[in-house]
Image (cartoon, rainbow, N blue to C red; front, side, top):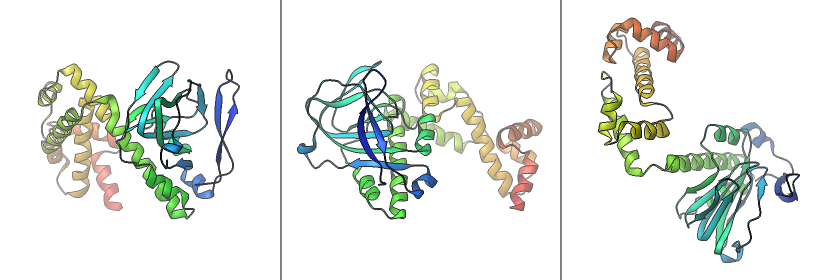
Length: 289
């Protein structure tokens, strides 16, 4: 970890407690765009938070608190109180007003606090979000803290990569709170779509494949893929076609038909809209590389 430390101070927002960063960052963190400010590996109950009244506060950095033992509570002004169970974590972003800690006993946690433009971008695209998430009882923050303690540049990079991978894992595991069995159906559907490139799947067919109503399917699919089912099929076909254009000598018309486009001109127009180049231009650029 770098030389930054976290201090408590009174903010100007109605007496809230502000947790601020004080100190300097190393060059590797500035260049990478992500730095782990602090981390804590709880050694047991001696480090547990005891129950305390809700005290609104905010951090000037991102924080993951993984409660692996105890009973916790997470509070926000709009959402009120949410109970936490062992194996859950709290994620908070800079300036997010909140409180978390023990509910009626202990709150034993591992923590990682971090900042930087990489984290900001992950927050903007939804990979990082405020709230309570399932993480499991394995203490997955400990390897990150251990790598961040080692000042070697390689260890600092490894710590950043491990933190990013963990954040993505949390996002995938918790997005939209969709049960895992529905995710498995979506994965099977996507595999089927990839294996039938000449077919134009309708939303009705996809919903039926997943045993969901169309409105429910649209909502679940968008939460999983980040786009509508129709847009996914359309873009997947063009991405697969682009690979074919670059790696084969087949004519554009043959490739268009292979991916379900009966009109090669329509295929070329859509290809250019998505890839930024016509199929022939894309092939020429690929060959030159």
